[in-house]
Length: 613
Image: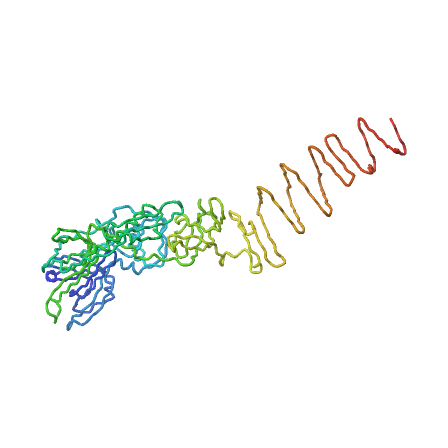
């Protein structure tokens, strides 16, 4: 910049076609918020406003010929305020960080197995943030699944940082600004030669105002959550305040959910919430003429009690330099007003950025590795993809397990229906949390039609599909038909059907019963006990068209009709009856080592030829 500019309070560098002379700046900076610098400048000609948008610019505040503070950003607004002179025009320019692009970008997508730092780096890079610095003093925890849903990248990034106990601010140079993310006060910037004095005076290092209000803070913060992998895990964590305020027992705060299944993270989140409340009531207000203060910058405050390091939480700068403006009396002025907190108080950003609430039901498609139709784990979970997750590489390998609601669930008892690959499912979210989906059922659609057509709307039931690569004729089925007069229960086993009864089985049929075995064998095994077949009215017919019938008993077989019977036992065969008739159409042969033929009243032997001996 020119030597004459260095003597001015304000100077500006930009890519404008005509040289700009800054005359006024109002700059607002706050930890974990976008800065905004409203700049007024004059130029001796017309500047194309469109060409200025998204271009970098920097305003320097010079004190005593030495630049003490740069305000660097990109131009988000540019336009003419008024005609300053015969030729000169007064322009207004708004400078914001590159991160402001993230406040416009909106998306729906899933991130799997990434830390918050990993996700933030992606978001910052997509928004065109060229310089970042992560000053993290503890390793971030890997997140299994993190959803961005109908929210801007800035909203998403801000809530992630709040959940992690992180915050951000900006450091400026003449040609750039750096986005700094940190999680401890050690990550803040130490402002050179920044010692402010509390007292009366006119020098730049004198506080012209000082306010330290006292306010209540919660006495205790408790957070709690639930881990379905370890249901009995204690995820209730508490943090008491370190502030010495009265009545702390009357001000407990409880938060559900803690948004974690990690006990260490849950403990930290209780502490972070407590620290956020304590930091908020530890703020002091002040104002001075020191031009080097920045949000996230450390300075020393000197009082009669000694020096205490403070950190600027928010600051508004006002600077005016009309020495070069035609028709206006020469004059310069700079002042600021700020809030700060003692460096001994850990800063924590309050969790005020709302998570998207996943209301109602969402639809998703079931994922599985190539060649698999059923993909599940030991909890019966599945992997899914939402239609709003536009990742081209979304597969079962880079997705997270999702629980499935069952009609009944216990330890190895209940119901189990595992949705299969490419089918559509309905998904709800625990506590409306986008990171906690749960499948609540399946859905038919234009490709996957219901089991029964509209003409068979009286039917209900279950029909499966054989795995793997089963066709429309490969299934097991249980169907109930409620059509009046044609009610039916239908069971179909694609291959085998097994029934186990550990005590009694009772079968009652009011009309006919037909059992047809098309091919194969039938075996009934009674290991111990009696078997009884009773026909109270009617006939029994046993027919073997091709083959034989064999009946075998260890003790005896008895056939009985009235007083007549045939008994077969290990001693022989006994035929008994009022009349016994043996009729051999061709020949009858009665033979034994001893044979007795006896007629107590009469014995008749007849034949064409009778041979004895």
